[in-house]
Structures are given as C-alpha cells and as structure tokens.
Length: 471
Image (tube, rainbow, N blue to C red; front, side, top):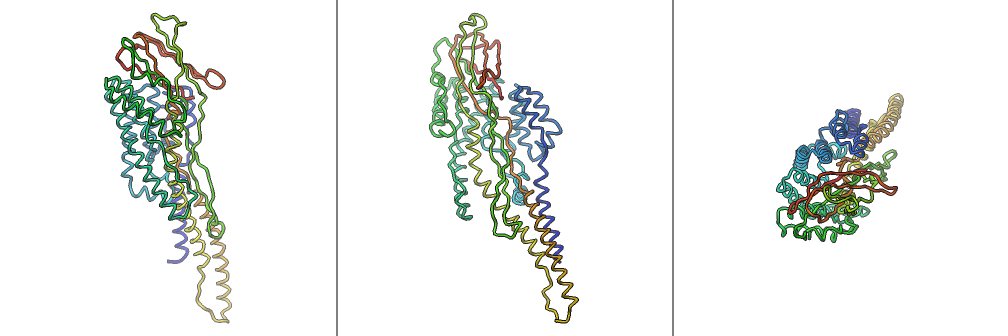
C-alpha cells in the first residue's frame, strides 16, 4: 500500500471525526423558548420544544432524554401534571439506560467528542426529575405517589457520595499517570437536597407519619450543615413550625420557583505540544457554566380570607430561600469537570499526534535506493518528488490541524429550563377559603405579581400552593 493511500485513509478518518462533531452544531430556537418561559407563556414554549426546528437542532435522537426532561419541566409549570409525569418518567428511563450505553458510542467520544453519544444526564437532573414528579403527584391528590418520588430522590442522593468518591480516586490516578497536578481535585459536597427533604416533611406530615417527617427535617438541617458551599444562606424561618400546628388550625405552605438555572457554554484553551508547527499546540474545547441571573431577589406573600377578613387584616410575609438550585448545578458540575478535562486532553493530543504523523510520513516518503553518480535524471526526478512531498506534507499538516480543531467541541448539553431557586414559607391559619397573592421584587421594584383565588385551607390536610416566575 503506497503512502498516498495511507494519507487518504488518515484524512478520511480525521474528516469523519469532524463530521461526527460538527453534525450537532446548528442554530437553535432556544432563545424563543426562553422568551416564552420568561413571559409564562407555557403552551407557546411547549409548542416550540415540539417544533420540527427544535427537533432537528436541540433534540435529535441522541438528545431524547433532554427532550422529555425539558418538555416535562415546562409541562409542570403549565399545570399539565399527568403529561409532565409521563415525560419525566421517560427521561428517567433514558438516564437508567445510559448505564448500559453501547461500546460503539463510547468509542465515538474518543474519536470526535462527547456529543456523538446519547446524552446520559447530569446527577442533579436525575434528582430534580423526582422532585418535580413528587409535586406532580401531589397536585393530582396522590400523596403515596409523591412519597415514592421523594424516596427515590433520597436513594439517589445516598449513592452520590459513593459515586463522587470513586470519581475523585479516578482523577487522582489519572493525574498521577499523566503527571498533571494542575487539575484540581475537589470534594463534592452535594449529597442531600433540602428541597426534597422539605417536600418529604410536608408529605409525611400529611399522612400523619410524624416520625418519618422528623427524619426528613433532620436531613434538611444536615443538608445545610454538611454543604455550606451549596446552602450558603440562612434556614427558612418557617421550618420550626412545620411539625407543630395548633389544634383547630390549618397550615398553608407556599413554594415559589424563580429564575433559570445556569447553562453550559463552550470556551477554548490551548496547550503546547512537542511537535512541529502547526501541530505544536492544540485546542481544548471545554464546557463551563454561565449564570442566568434572575431579576428576582425577594418574594412577598399576601393572604386574604375571601369570606370574612378585610384586606387590611391580610397576612403579609416574605418567602425564604430554601434551595439555590444554581449552587446545586455548580457543585455537581465540578464533580465531572476534572474527568472531562483529562479525557479532552488525551483525545486532542492523540488526534494531533496522528495528524503530525501523517504529515511526517508524506515528507519522508522518498525512495531511499542508492543511485549511481551518473544517474542525473533520476536524481532530478527524486528532487522534484521530494519537493512535492514537502509541499503535500505542509498542506496535509495544515488541513489536518484544522480538522482536529473543528472536531473538538465541548458537550454543552443539559436541562435548560430548571428553575434557579426554590423559596418556601408557611403559616398557620383558621380553616377557610383564602386568596394568595405573590409579588416578585427585584432591585428596581416589582417584577411580577400572581394571584390564586378560592384556595380552601383545611385542617389536617396538606395545603401546598405553588407559584412560578422564571424571570
């Protein structure tokens, strides 16, 4: 097999890697969906998610998990509880199936990049699937179904600490093998969700299981105590009264979701290589989190008894931040970041070495057979061939460098429409029918307001009202 055949095969391989990675790089309708969400136009957002354009750009087959997760969360916001349950259960199945991901897909991540495989989901996404499904089941008056989801969350959270410790040990070994101490090894401190624990307290209290409610309350306090980087704010003031409702009184609980959690974006960095130019350095395309700062920093609640209390006697208080979902996303993201860097580094170095090898093979493809001194024509022919090979080698070197760089794309897939924060509050009231108004404030005053009428507050029941403003 001659050198040109080797060159063509090598270039074909590199072009195939570029095709695999670039196939997912489309203009997408994400901004349109976000604008609908900011305006609480939930049905319009769902319609865009389901559109052909979104299916091609945001949700190709390998992103099926994200389609169901994104649509399931937005369907929850819209109050389509059963549809949301179906989507979120489907998303959970895709996450479970990721553990048996095909070897062929994994090989593709080493040839091109991680975008070539089915999206496997992030740890926090797996957790919030069950959190939102718990709320879905509650809204369908299925407390047992809600508690099943909360138990699933707690099981997954128990597994996280083991998973993260194993990942940390793998990073230690990889750093040692690659002699790369510059990669930070950070302990991940998110293995408990205050939001899930809070819902557990409410649901267990509702069925009269105060022992389990106290266990979840203790778990909630432990979440704050053991993960101060995630829970870097005060405990909600209403927690101390959740398990001590006075006789003949009813408890109203309110949960409010605000903002949108961070999104991933790509950034580039370059590392030097001991190779000839242009392969003397290579580009790493890595993901990072970009904040989507919410316009809301205070949530006020106003409660009126619609049948007896005048407006002047309205109860008024602020909801307290329970879980900063932004912090949860950042904490779980860093668990995998060092492994992403190590894998990307190894992959791009391998492709750069292969590209440099192809160029060198072309340049060194001269016929080494000795010639007689009088064979001038053959010497001239070989000189021309050597010059041609040098030129071809330079062209191939530059072309392969471009292909290698284009084939490196960060995997920036993630759930895009989870809220950024969860606020909660609770108050003891006389049983009756109430209206609840929630005002959302930012630095420049009122951002939005929402009101629900005819909320019947019953003694001995769980009276949980949910509000959403994702601006």
